[in-house]
Length: 361
Image 1 (tube, rainbow, N blue to C red):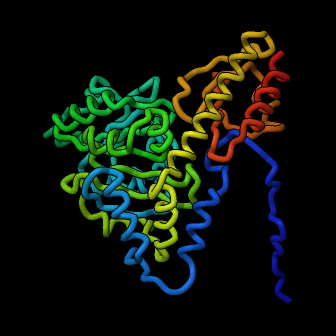
Image 2 (image 1 turned 45 degrees about the horizontal axis):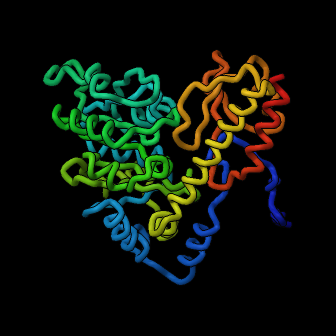
């Protein structure tokens, strides 16, 4: 007899809350509704559908000019495939040591993409022209991988945000050196909400060539996209996406989610809320520090978006994780990362602050 798993009301406790990752959140109801709307009947597969065509139109308007949009499943796939399209086989990418492509993608840029990463230490996660120059050299040297692109993250892996002026300076410097510019925008909505600027203002207008556009961390389900802003900076994505196993057969469901996010203001609403919850978390801790009910906690990065980086006294993190899940960032230093999502509530934050107060007398 075939045994069927009855999911009933679900296999997890929906009341369980945590601060480990914005990936822990579910799918936003408006995004789920978009998936349901795209369902039913037959629609052409592999991107020749009405939803993907509409997504190209919407993102062209959002980014202020013609774009080529390639929906994919995840951020690593977007980053690796985008960078492959920007480089010859002998090309290398300059990036921050803390960049997601360097520390959190299991070597996929090197293993899958065949791309040499040339990294530089960035205490706040942000590249500068001076830091780029530490690795941007050796052109014409047959013994050195050729630095032909930079990849920066907006927001960065440590939760900081580039200003428009900082982005413009980095892009201008890279272009002057003959290098192309890729942005890992897994949390670009959070950066846009924090800066109060449009997506166009911090991408096309400052010189970004190719963008990995995030969706999953902001309320979508396995939905990201590569957005080519300068067609001269990228080639072969039609083939590379398939070769990298990122071509969705039922692409309408990926595109419909991105339409729900970026076709209106949902991407900003979700991101602004997540940012506000992180600010509330930090402010709550700072207030309790002022009255002496939280001690031994310090902040290791600016809280620009929806991430709070802090250091804790020995043993506190493990005790807190009995009630709220989160990750160590640098266990040797006692540094942790707390993330907020579109569904984090004020009650969640306040309960976590109370828990921190109990564990740090």
